Image 1 (cartoon, rainbow, N blue to C red):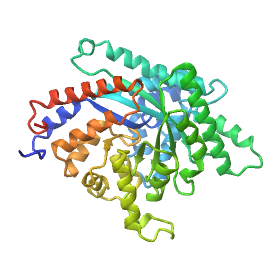
Image 2: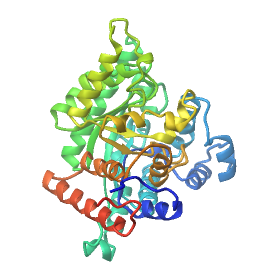
Image 3: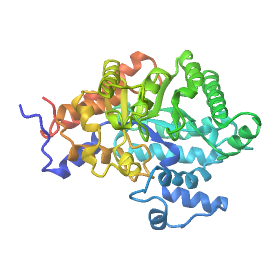
Image 4: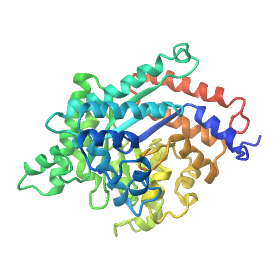
Length: 415
């Protein structure tokens, strides 16, 4: 049996990829706004933009290629500015869910840093409730469809991941006031305290209000901001049975991934791009670098710690990655690691899940089984907001629908 994917019929493959049930476990709310919404809300709030047209924003802000991670992150200043009212957060979350549904994504985990949106009119609970309201509205609308109610297709579900920041400045009223409250503390200590405060709030609101806050994340620049600094926050959510995912190996070496899985109990890794790069090991104490990488990789493989792959985003933020086929995703496939396709930021990176899958198919040696595994890993390793039995049934439903959609497409069907 030839299990390789024949890419000659590109149109047929693209149409099928759009139909199969997909998931996105790593998508930032503030990096995935519709440009039309940024323009509309900026006008309503009297905010300045470099341009008030989609074409202008694409040219001046949301580019096809960024010089570095710093330029990439500047885009969030414009999106964050329109996310300071509950009705705006609800609209943005609702639209993001709709955009995913329209390309066949049946499960999403929306992540964002709620402390960036706390202000005079919203505290943490209000921020989380507003985002959940938008997602819940989109979920209910979609799941009322006849094909969903008749169980011919899997329903749409979602969960929320809250992000603590490795480092921050006076980027919101909350952060400004928080920094000012600790006159005699250095920045790293302040960041640790902010993470712990968020951890406590996330657990309390999850338990009190019943929101599907399923995981805790750590985001932001890795260099100079080690994950281990946030041990207390992650230990707190760990003891409260909340899942953990950590941005690691995006713009720093394998030691960042090591800290994520050993210090922060990470169930998943965001990006993991530098996993195999021995040249980025900074510590002189690590004398056998190959063995160090091998041990980390073995640990990740044994425990099925899933890596959230963001191909387009990595191309945009890593100038050294000149060709996508040089991405370490190829080595992850060789080592049979659990990986899943993610967008990171749909607007900033101008992508969606379908595009990420097609990018992988066109540039890596992926057979039909590998593609199916990557899709299913996303469902299996999700932080699903329900009991384990419910998750098993949902994964089974998504898997059966995947096989049904690809059954008449020999180029994708696994016999």
